[in-house]
Amino acid sequence: MIPRWRAAGLGLLLALFTAQASAHKPSDSYLTLKVAGQQVDGQWDIALRDLDMAIGLDADGNGELTWDEVRARHPDIAAYALSRLALGVPAGGGKAEPCPLAVTSHLLDDHSDGAYAVLKLRATCPNAVNTLDIDYKLLFDIDPQHKGLLRLEHGALTSTAIFAPDSARQLLRVADASRWRQFFDYVKHGVWHIWIGFDHILFLLSLLLPAVLIRREGRWQARATLRASSIEVLKIVTAFTLAHSITLTLATLGVVALPSRVVESAIALSVAVAALNNLWPVITRRLALLAFAFGLLHGFGFASVLLDLGLPQSSLLLSLVGFNVGVELGQLAIVAAFLPLAFLARATAFYRKAVLVGGSSLIVAIALVWLSERALDLKIITA
Image (tube, rainbow, N blue to C red):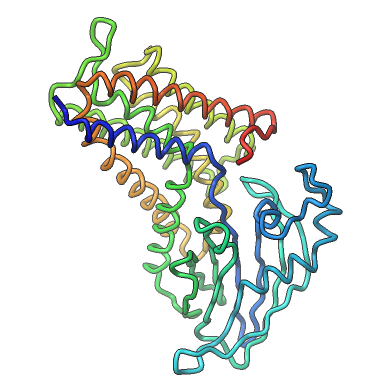
């Protein structure tokens, strides 16, 4: 008999994933800085929903932002943003000489997850910039999951960085030509984005839940060995990886493009179908085929994130591979946490009823909410 704490641990693991999935995607901002001598020109894309949360853009409180409401707050948006970003050049003793920063214009743009305010930036440093001191504090006081995604350009060279509460200040060499640094930067991007891609996580979990079981005589039974379960998991993960790698590459290179709403709606539908298959099994022995078919759709979803980040043309292939490696590492972390607990609990009624049936039912409900929101442009989950 499996110890109850292990069974409870598996249930808690699933609950944490599904609880996170019911909330909004953690926020990102996209900061591009171009260095030329003493001058730094930039663009900062910040989600309107984040700015509304921080300074309150919705003047009439009707839950919808208009261009007039945003335009009326341009000075406040600029003041808020500039109070949370500082640029400088190292001056010795751990100090930096400031590069006074100004917002030169305001625009709007659409990203895959909604509308963004676009702030055009300019700074002039006291001397030529070889190393840039960046202090980034946007939203960290109200959203500790927020990330600032930086693209730093100097001539033909491009590097990237991720700002988080524990890495809010960074020194970046603008002339760093290391392609391996760029590779590892995009690996970090890939890991981060699989962990905030809750629809991708729930799709993978829906396929993994029955991987430690086998369907016989109309009911689920425990697989005999960890080896058999591991082989099934390996098939599923490999198929999913191969499929989304194909479409991620094609979409990122501009060979194939699909409308964002179609892609996001189809991904939500794939999550619902995979979880429904656990409740009313139709495909029981070739789940890898299901993983491959729907993995093609998920690749377009990953591509939208990567396109938002921007790929340096000087190292396009290396950055694309790095991002994909990061996605796979993120997936492996999920599998490593899930498989041992699932295997230990597989023969229990708790696993078959609470985890497989209960967990799949919850995933179906979440996926149908996503599908309604994405396909019909509704807002059902507001927390």
